[in-house]
Length: 338
Ligand SMILES: *Cc1c(COP(=O)(O)O)cnc(C)c1O
Image (tube, rainbow, N blue to C red; front, side):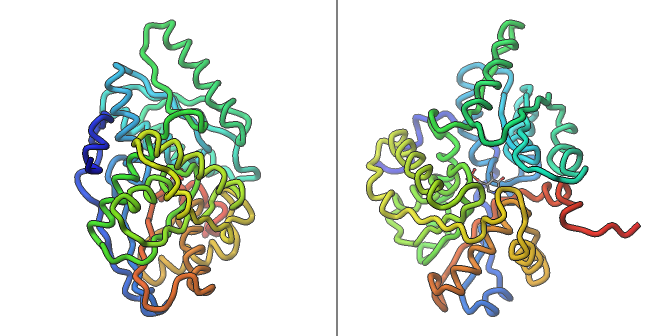
């Protein structure tokens, strides 16, 4: 069975207009002594782009097949996933309910009003809040409670779950991306990708493995430490392998997570993260976001300095987007000129 056939049984909405660009970063390549490329998944198009566009193709495919008219989804206040879901719902003429969790403490005013919060309001989404940021099962249960109310009103709700006890449909989008990347660059040596829920990292690794590509795939922890993330990734890979009807064991052997860029924690910037964000902007004119991609680039710099990425190697960093959060983090990132 070819990989394409493996995807045939999953309904899929179309939000991508084609493969995303793979661009060489010339100045950073010379500075770091490697052959560095950026997979521009910040340019996936729908509602400010980012990695969730690929994941949502499969969730919305499933939702449409089930006749849903309303999508419910949960995430951090500056979640890109909920903003992208609201954009996808708008495109398909559906309603969206976004649940925002308190995951990051002590944030300035812009965190609650600008960036993704602003965009979701423009998209016309309904908002609800959840007081806890580390309770995936509880957050999902709260979505189901709201879904039940909507059902009683005659609506047809569809919940996109956060917890791991559901099929990781979003990872299928990165299974596709892994294959796409290998076709664009069959001789890639290393791929560096953020590892949060694990849908991106797990899907990509699986796609790369099924292309019989031997590149190292490094997952940079952005949400939890490497021990916890390793355990989570094993579950994600197993669930994805079950969906695709493949053996998970060879995937587990290729799992690689690192948490050097995680401190001081999810959604919080260290000096190193900030320096990585500035370096990409000032060397290549490309913006990274403060929560995911700046940490990913900081992780990549660490891999180079540690020798885990070697001089001359062909390296791809996946730019997963998240750029609206730059404005949600303006109090943390910028000084006020007024
Ligand atoms: C959600 C997100 C991630 C993490 O992706 P997962 O699939 O949840 O691991 C990385 N980067 C950005 C910009 C995101 O919004």
